[in-house]
Length: 311
Image (cartoon, rainbow, N blue to C red; front, side, top):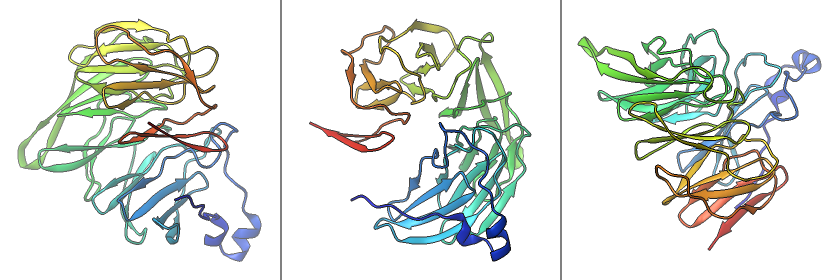
């Protein structure tokens, strides 16, 4: 099933504001639809770069649409929404929790004064649902209470990864943090290791992948490094032979293989582990998006088409 839904911000403006409205800054790479939607199986929730947040039924009928103020940035907005229970989390430097039923604001928590294009992630810890931002702030999903103010400097463009009580922030350098329960429901966080600076290229749009104790990370020049999650030690470093192209999509796990693809559509499948083993290079279509998988199907979005690849 394929449908297209309207999300025109002018519908949310009065007549005067509609006449004066100017779209926010963005660039050709980001546009206004860089964020990945999320779903609870009954509705699809999306955030658009004009400041529109909307929910749609699975048939494409709009359930609600609201406007939130997004920070101005010449590269636009790219953070994806996060659904935790009945709360839709929108990260816009500040963190906002919306009621998924109607889009009303449940809470808003002041974020750290550094913008990021990355997305928040969900973490279960000490019986609580937590939200971890790319800038290393940790808040409670139910009411937005800040549980940890700042674990490290954080990331400009990609998302953190969570495993157990540990959080990994992977950018030009890597920080590993650990949460511990405190008294009266409090949480403490501390760094347990960090790498030297600049082990990755600065173009860090690709988010890292954690699998079986290893962290897989690609930089903007398609250099791959695999690190031990326990220590940060580099297991191996290589550059898959994908030819020309930038690295914006993140590595993705499908079964017992890891997919890596560049902006020109060239891709390889890695065998997880402590040495580099990859398939032959294949090519589909230029894309900036990370594919998603459902059983034996792979879905790839290019600039003009959506592809479904199956056995």
